[in-house]
Length: 524
Image (cartoon, rainbow, N blue to C red; front, side, top):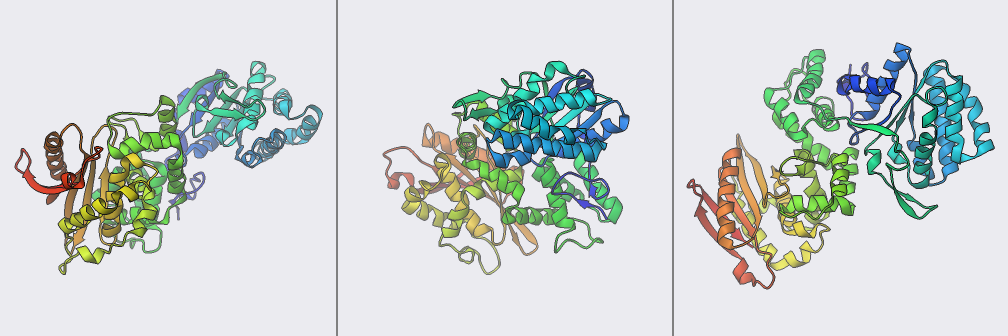
């Protein structure tokens, strides 16, 4: 039986999959190889890059025009900037791959002598030259995880590839594909030997083009899930299919992980039962609580200053940007954000993971219990919950907000941490935020018996004047309530102006929007 793949390259015999070559612009790649070009294929982690390279290798070798070898150079990362050891690792791995893929033992016989004779600074170039000269067909080299290398080791590889470029195809590979998370032009390589920062585009200025592997389309998501239905008889309800697409926006690992959780993990649905939207939501929560490696790798990037400069104004909804184009390119390459209008986190799962990760420790330190806010009939008292938060915020916010690395979004994060601590025991919180939105939209979804109750909480930072902020907030809250079909709405306004007394900032009111929707207002 096949299953959903969440680790490593896809194997069609073992995994449900979208054929990797169908996800590439194969005609363009063929043209680049035919024209003897060196180019880049990049995409965020666990998007399908390695699967695509392996499928391309097999296709080219089956066609018989070229001899194609794939090599993963990540093993060189452990040697850091020891150029000789990195070169030894790469040449050894490349020779092993050539033997296994092509039955070609030439490189394995010659590279140790080449390295000993001419040293690491030119050994890769010379080994590729001799291999190309001995080959009966043009060589195509696919180098995966190129950005795992660092500093002088990475510079050495790039410069040697450039140095042999003019000898192709008789004396060097006809085409080389560099694959990683980032485009090589965006590398900022710190050379310890020269104590200088060198742009990746400089030592590899022979690059003809950069191709990016995208996420699944909605049709591809349906096709992938349909393979499971066809082979097992277990269907996904239309709501579940829509939920998977909405929550993941086609990110390949997320799609497979949600499906794997609902169809194969402990407690998975009986094959006779269709997978429901509620099962997908529960699967999402399990992925987040387990802090899966995919999500952990992503959230670890939140510690970087260039990521914080992008994400912090998204969380606060700020209008002004204080990040550079380089910062944005980096975070786009990570797959953390998408450049919509407004700039936003790439998908709802990442959008939930980010604030939860930033507030993980804080949540556990709150002396709050869900039972305090749940009535005997199982209903959640949101008014009492916000009353408690308002008191807490007045008494403790100055201390708690300073604990966040993302201090500009501190009030919004503190509210989300407080709510998450209470709601997570029985319901869930959905979030919407983005650059320039000037607000954070929160939706509490609370099951109560056969009912599902929804409450909107909209957060705004006071700007210009209180009345203008309230006027905008009331309309935005009413619109969000209508879109989510929520029964009640609350507008929280944080007054962060210097010199304001708490007696002026803290208040509670209730007003109607222009469409006559009654909304509770909380000043803080």
